[in-house]
Every structure is written in structure tokens, then in C-alpha cells.
Image 1 (cartoon, rainbow, N blue to C red):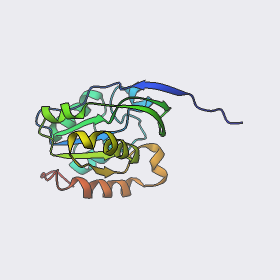
Image 2 (cartoon, rainbow, N blue to C red):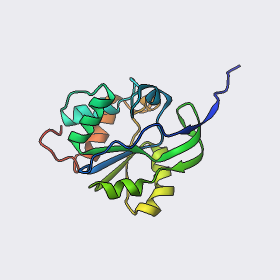
Image 3 (cartoon, helix red, strand yellow):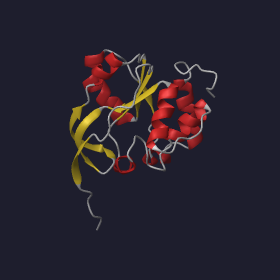
Length: 176
């Protein structure tokens, strides 16, 4: 008999990662237990988020939270999550209950963000339900880079989808 995972009330563990000249905002749903343990967004070692961005931007793969923040600032990318808190089982987005959203409008006013992306179906659905009416900004869906989504996409397939979506707003000499 399988043991049922415990549902916990999780509060967002990080401040948004941004600089005033950020032009892109990537929103996830809420940090995973692994990311919380490692102290920064998308820090599960099996998550493809950082390898994808490093490959696309032809930059060294950041490892520490400080390197990741510097990478984002140099790339003019901001990171945050749709949710400020929720009930969730582990890292299972499909188990989210009682969502409370982050005040993303505040972040949009403090930055130069012109392009908004959501990673995964849950983040996209939550954004469209709770934030779109407030911000009026459409989001572009990006497939999740989490290990749970690796059964649906290879690294190369994810890289290709992210490349097509990010190419227009990341028109830089470094972009793959």
C-alpha cells in the first residue's frame, strides 16, 4: 500500500529576482521543496531551467544563488512565481489548493518588463485566472522544465520550444 504524501501550507520562500532594467518576467507556480532547500528558483539539480537558459544565451551555467541572480540581471530576466502561498503535496502542482497570488503588478511597475512567460500549465492557468485581469498583460506559455515533465519532453525538445518563444524578446548577439 502506497503512503499518501502530506499536503503542506507553503509560503513563498524567495523575493522576486529582478533588476529595474528587466524586460522579461518568467513566472512559475511556487518553489519546489528542492529549490527551497537550495535557496533559489529552479534549483532542483534535475530541473532543466538553468541549462536551457545558459545554452540559449551562450553563457556559463550558474550554480550558486549569487551566480544565478547575476545571470538574470545580465540577461534582463526577472523571476518570480504566481503564488505567494498555497496548500500543496510536495512539488505536485496538480495538488495546489487555496492559492494566494503574488502582487505581480508591483513588480511590473518597478521594472521595464514587456514580455511575460509562464512555466507549466498550472502557472499559466493560475496567471490567467488571477493575474491577467489585474495586469492586462498576456503571457506566453512555456513547458515546465521540472523533472516531472521530463517524461513528456527531452532536453532538446524543451530547448527548441523555449528558443522559439524567447527568440523575439531576447534578440541579443549571444542568443542561440
